[in-house]
Image 1 (cartoon, helix red, strand yellow):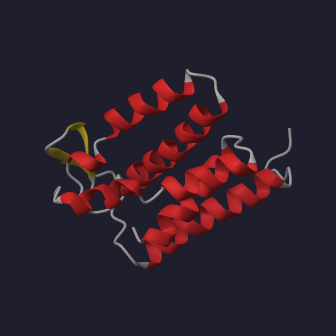
Image 2 (spheres, helix red, strand yellow):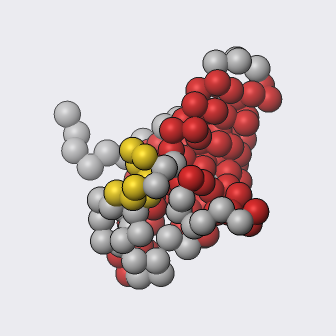
Length: 137
């Protein structure tokens, strides 16, 4: 997925799980971390896209219950949103083992499919913010 798509999806995901505006901003800023750490020579979608270390870091920070650690947890949660968005692309991610990629989708970077998925996330987040529901109970 494109960088902008990762940022939008991280923001929408943070909104959908109840993030406050500052937390949504932190998640949005963290959405490019998996690709940014690759600048030190790590292969693309290798260990940098393995979700388990990211999840452990989010949990460790979240459990500290301080303002800064919570904000950092949201920042790293943005990286997790990036990783799980890439799970649905043709490139996949190393979900179970750091050197074995799994793909659950066929979305190609920059394709109409990517834009459609991003639009669905935007729509869901907007509906959530305004309390709109498709089905009323």
